Length: 277
Image (tube, rainbow, N blue to C red; front, side):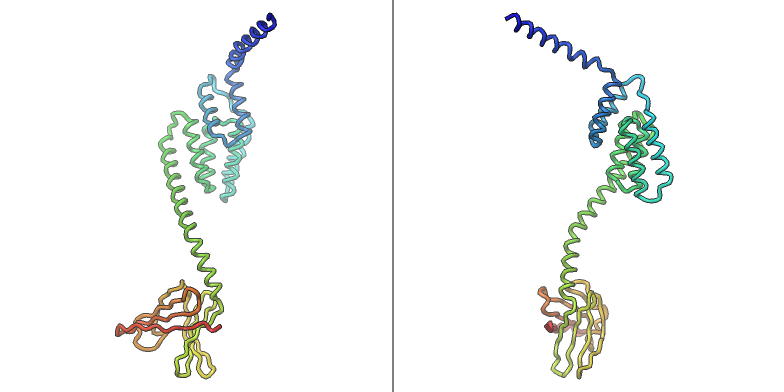
C-alpha cells in the first residue's frame, strides 16, 4: 500500500514539474525549435506565421545568422545578373534558403516576391508579399504592396480563365486535327454529264479545286480548310456564272462534299462531290 502511495506522489510531482520545465524554455530556444521544425517541412506557412509572431514578441530581436546573410548575398547577385525567368527563379530559391534559417526577415520575403514575379510564378510571388506584410509591422510601403498583391490576384485569375478556355478548346482542336488527318489524300468527284468531272482534292489543310476533261486535269483554285463548313472568298473562281456566294460543306462521315452555291438571282443549289475510294 505504501508503495502505491509513493508512486502516486511521484507521478503527481512529475506532472507539476513538467509544465514548469516547458515554461522555463527561453524564447530563443522556442525559436530554434520552430526553425528546426520548419526546415523539416518548408511548406508549412502556418508555422512561418507562428515564427514571425513569436519573433515580434522577443526583446531584443534575434540576430540574423551569418549563414542566412550568405544566401541573401547569393540571391542578390542572382537577381542582378538574371536574364531569363529561370535565372529569377534561381534567385527566389536562394532567398528561400535564407528564409529557412531566418524566416522572420521581411526583406527576404519582399525580394523573393520580386524574383518570383519576374520568374512568372505569380502565386508564389503573391504569397511572398503577403508574408512580407506579416513580417514587416507598420511597413511604410504596405499600401503599395497590397496593391501589388491585388494586381497579382488579377493576373492569376486571368491566367486561370485562359487555362480553362484552352482546356475547352484543346479537345476541339485535337478533334479537328484528327478529322483533317482522316480526310488527307481523299479525292471527291462530281461528273457533270458533259464529259467534265469536277474534283476536290484534300491535301493536308488545303482543299484543291479542279476539273478533269479528256484525261487532262486542270487546277482551278486552292483554299485553306477552316472546318467542316467554309465559305469560299471569291466564289466566281469556283463555279462560273452569276454566283453570289459559295459554301463548302464536308459531311460528318467524310463520304462527300457539298458545294452550296447561291446565285445572284437568289437561287441556291447543292452540288455533291462523292469520295472516290
